[in-house]
Length: 382
Image (cartoon, rainbow, N blue to C red; front, side, top):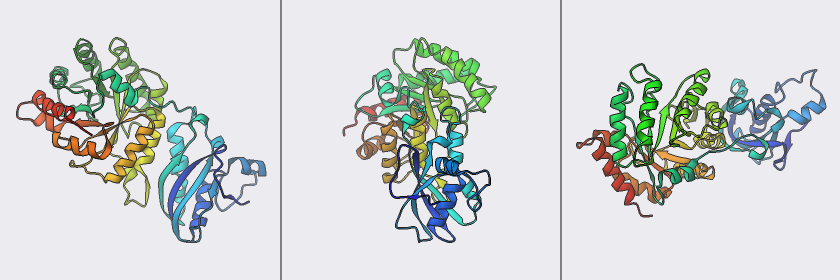
């Protein structure tokens, strides 16, 4: 029952590219992964397993010249039939892609580095707004978008938060996100800050997207989305911010609610999953690919030149993936005015300069810091 194929069958399978290291050969490791993550035990056939079942549900391996090596790259095709794309979601997909092979001694390293899924065979909706929707709402075109981050991360009262928001808006931001530590603390609960911020933005002269942090367990996230959406009808620029640890499948759940809210994906903590020095990891570009399918509008893509400074070629690839899905790549972690032009020279103008520390620590205050950033963004030439 050979599972090696010479070409990809796009009708029956979605494809994942792996880098594998094995105690024996790449071929043996690939077979253990393909069988173990589809039909069953890699080394034993079940008495309940029919030939028809095996043919329909077993993953396939694309032939490669590296099979006899102990390590290498290999594409594995997983049957679309193995997932109920409407009900099983991202969590189950990742379980299939990066699950039981970690329990096989022969596989000593496993990196998921690429993914190809035909969205026509799934129920992924993609972004409701994305780059085009955010530019249309804010009226900001032909330059990077300018985002402001709420700092301090937590501890402020709703009124203090509103005062900060006013300074950022008057300073020219296009987008504001609450930090991922905010969520729903007693000092500044969602029930108090949402109507306060929504009322101010509704009456403001400027159109600014504002994303409320709603980190939490699945049973609370949908309730928070519905609560915020009630205040979005008259304004249209409210959104939600979910960190990766509360996100993954939740991004898709929220997008499927068709709430009209902008969805921001915050990556902080992703290196537990994506760090390239780990023997087992998922490439960040793959998670960005999934984020685009799920329907996020903006995502903290990484940073160039800040206190976080990612590899330029890797960032260009991540941004390319996000652009394919109309997702706004937000760059932050040390953003400041003199980085806006150099970054634009590398990646173009379809990105967002997200900044917190610089604008709030400015000697003239938050509004003055925002105006400095606005000036740098407006001066962009590419």
